[in-house]
Length: 334
Image 1: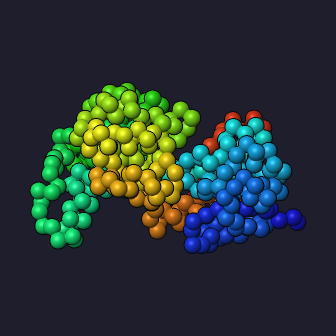
Image 2 (image 1 turned 45 degrees about the vertical axis):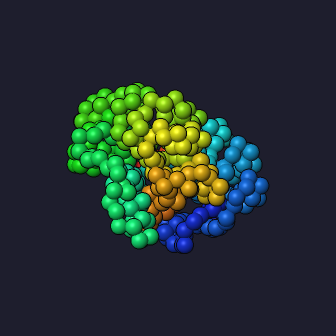
Image 3 (image 1 turned 90 degrees about the horizontal axis):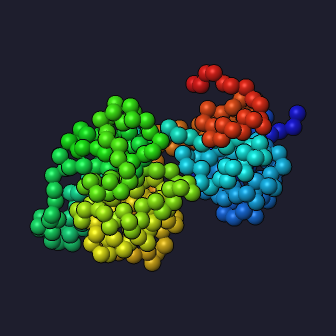
């Protein structure tokens, strides 16, 4: 019996043991690569039956060159590395993992917010440099009674809303896809994006990166913001127009930013954000804990195992592919 060829295009993990364990139940040859370009992906994946992807480009050109591929499963929620439309047209299932790091990302977003509002990083640096002076953190404002605006109100920001409410924050959100009754249950007021920037003392960004959301936060929004505004982004860097963010920070239009994601990753060494003391930057780590990494890797591989076993995956990104690909619905997931 011919083995299924499954290629991991690229990965930052120290081990692929969870993937191997899941796929060991099938007749699979697992190939680990570290592709960076379209050419490298095409070379190793051309005859693959399935692809597991992290950051390597799965573009229209790559997909056109896939001869046997049945499923592309991505580590994570976002699928901006994959041309989903091209995959759908070719009858390739695209899958992701939407629920592996809800606690981690919401915790990290709130950690960045608390660090900014309490001036933790700045005061830590000053103290370690021999300056013992709380006045260097001024002004610091009480959180209770202030307003946190959420850009997006999916799983992660819903969890963040609950955590922030326990600190006494009022929550508003912009999300044109969330039903009013969901917002009501969360005690969250839905507003338009510009109104969110007018009203918020703090903003946390959780929108996926699509053609509609790329650069959706730009000069227009920063011009409406309070000068005391701190903005946090744990979603995707390009959702915020980074040049506009830099201009707003340099002009003092907002108070600071906490970024786990940037327009280019790793961040370029000459990026002005690196020299701003009112900006905290972490290396796209919000998703990570030991538990979430193991869960992510296992569920990403389970998407592949499902499809190769004749089932639609639990985390199906492109349901319209069902018009071309007829598999069984898997009723029970462990």
